[in-house]
Structures are given as structure tokens and as C-alpha cells.
View (cartoon, rainbow, N blue to C red):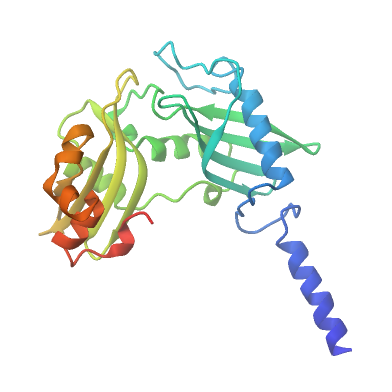
Length: 260
């Protein structure tokens, strides 16, 4: 009898945590190759065919090359979570420069549909203070426009991100940042970000940098060189990579802050 009860309990647990269960309490990730993941990506492909004419909400663009031309669209998915019939996805369209897409989808009558879509690299931002962390600004905008979407569906924004972007990186009111990676521990932080102009017309080389908190303020310690300078960097030559070089030069830096 006890074995039967345990079996029933296990079946209930598996059902509650399965991809098909609608009323989950926490966002869950769809496994690669799953039917629901495929349906979401197919819906996103269809949405891109009409973007930015449709699904743009109130977002504006000045660039004329924002549209994705017809053809085979392959995604590199960076983030995909589902919670209570809502899905949030962040994906890069391969073979297209700076074609990163953030999108909110909803499942209606067993079909996924795009509710909103935005390109964080090209979207126009008018308020420097609000937009310095572009993705954080976009997360806030989406949750305000769709109050039924649980904030935990979207990626978490580290509370120190804005302080570092404002105090340690930006020295003017022109460039804002699309953060691709941020992790902090014990007063050290590693940031990977794409600086861009407020109007979305200009995107600079990626800025990957190590920061340290000194006397209550964040200080830029070293930034990764780009292009030919990267190959010629003595630390890269000696250790085979910039992060490997940083680990050797600053052994006190927590290794967990770097991407695996």
C-alpha cells in the first residue's frame, strides 16, 4: 500500500512539473527538441516576417535595416522561460548583425502568438537615465504594458548593474548599454555589454570588462581589447585568452563571475 501511495505521489509531482502543466508556480525552461519549444520558435519566425510593422507596441526605430528579409531564420536562443501560458524569449537571429530579439508570447487556444517584440540594439531610447541599461528598461516596459505577466518570467536584473553602468562605464549622456552578461561577487564584477547610441543608429564594439569596488565606488580595472589588439595583447598570447590572463593576474577574483 505504501509503495502504491509513493507511486501516485511521484506521478503527481511529474505532472505538476511537466511542460504541459499550465499553472506552474515558477518559470520553467523548455528542453531542446520539445514540441512546445518548436511551436514558440515557429511563432517567433512568423512574427519576424511582420516586424517592426506589427508587434512593436510603442517602440520606435530610426534604422531602415531593422526588418529581417524573407528566408530561412535560424535562432540562437539565449533565454526562454514559460509561466502560466506566457513565454519570454531572447534570441539572436544567426547571420544577421545585431539582430537580437526580445519577445513576449501568449498561448491562446493551444496556439502560441507573439504579443510584443523588440530589438534591443536598434530601438530608440529618449531618456538616458531610464535607458542606460537597455534590457532592464525593456523588461520594465513590457511588464507595465502586460500586468498579468509575472515579473519573474523575465531575466533577473542584478541590483548593482545600474550602478556600474552609470558610475564606472558611462562618462557621457550618449551611449547606453545592452548587457549580455553580468555577475558580481565579493566586490568584483565581470560585465559583457554592447554599447550603443540613444537613437539606435550606432553600435560600438562589445565592451567586456572587469570591475572592482574600492572605497564604496566601482572602478574599471581592465577591459578586453578588440580585434587585432586582442590577438596582440601580451596576456592573451601568454595565457591563451583574456579571461585566462585575468585569472592569472588577479588570482583574488572569484572565478564564478566569468561565463563558463
